[in-house]
Image (spheres, rainbow, N blue to C red):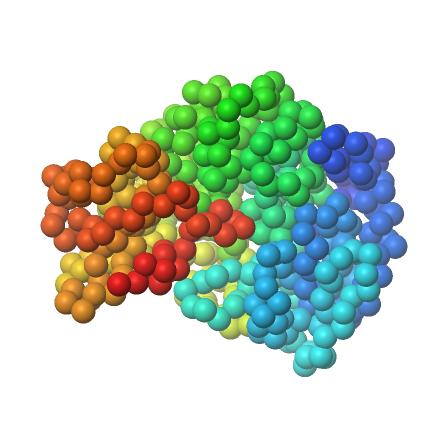
Amino acid sequence: MPEDALLAAWSATLAQHAEKAAIVDPQRRILLRFRELEELSRECPIELEAGEILAVQIGNHAHWPSLLLACLRRRVVVLPLERTVSARERAVVLRACQAAGLLTAPDVPIKRLASPNAIDWGGRPPVLLKLTSGTTAAPRAVRFRSPQLRADAEQICDTMGLSDRDLNFGVIPLSHSYGFSNLITPLLVRGVPIALSSDRMPRAVLDDLRRTEATVFPGMPLFYQAFCEIPDPPVLPNLRLCISAGAPLTRPVARSFRKRFGLAIHSFYGASECGGICYDREALDDREGFVGPPMNGVTISSNGSPGGGTQMAVRSAAVGDDYFPEPEPRKLGGGVFHPDDLAEIGEAGVRLVGRLSDVINVAGKKVNPAEVEAHLLAYAGVRQAIVFGRASHLRNEEVTACVVAASGTDEAALLQFCRERLSGWQVPKRIYFVPQMPTNERGKISRRELAAHFAP
């Protein structure tokens, strides 16, 4: 059997960095050296059979890389679960994905689940299943083999310039595709160490960035917005690279952060199905939704015209095999992934302009929420805006918006601002002012949940 691609990369990393710090805590105390990660992986009891699925729900624990290495050697398939997943949701996922075991802490035994039937992987067994929400309520995952995960790590490191001289700050969930690809696999494949934290309070994150002297911060827009609002923030002389993913980064937040901290935020666009897609290397384009050109090793094509919103086809060595348990070959397979995002593809790169599932049907006329959001954000005092459709007896759907704005911002004036710049069917029927946008652990906002919450 050929050597596992991730284990082969790890062997090279271990030979070069054995006695160096691999993971440090928020005070920069060494938690594990590379050699100790290897020793832990050899001692880790994985009492499952090759091809069986182990669900892992241990949060941002320092043992994550060792656990992954142990499973790779046993050829046990890893299914990462976010810490915030409820017991009910977890039970649904475990059943749908046919998990054979569950691990909720590194120092407790694996809980053996009701033995599912042996899974026929068709001669291409995965090493990792990444959960993805998809377009339905039913849970599903994406199948990845080691060569795909290694390719994604190499594309990220090469495109973003990450190396073993950096210190990656890990506060985003390691169980999510973003955290896994930007933190765990760069450590294994390129020896990029991690400063690991579980305190997500903005002031604590800034203080920990200063104490650890981290050079790279993979964050989300909600962090950067909060950083801009903190009085007397610490100076971060060692931080050289700020990355934003998980949700769209608005231009006001990017401009405010650059003005306050003297650092650009580089938008990173990816998907669970294929890892990194685009990266804004220069961070100079001021258009809303701009995410830069394709990553190294990634190609993007489209059947639409360059000026209009169109669906993309993403090709790279990092694209997953297919969905599990039910494949969807027209969307994912054969090294090609078709995201639901609508994009404008130009010489400078890709600008996201909406999603197929987000289009609002107002009496037969199609409204792209991103267009309305761009106009709302152009109004003085509006910091965030999310537009969604909610049910309407007369018009099928009606345009509705939630905004985070400065005190004193008036709904009537904001609506009049929209009427002056948008077609009648694009103007929101109602605008709700909220203190902050509700987000999940990944920093994403669900239009579907907002529509349900503000149902008429």
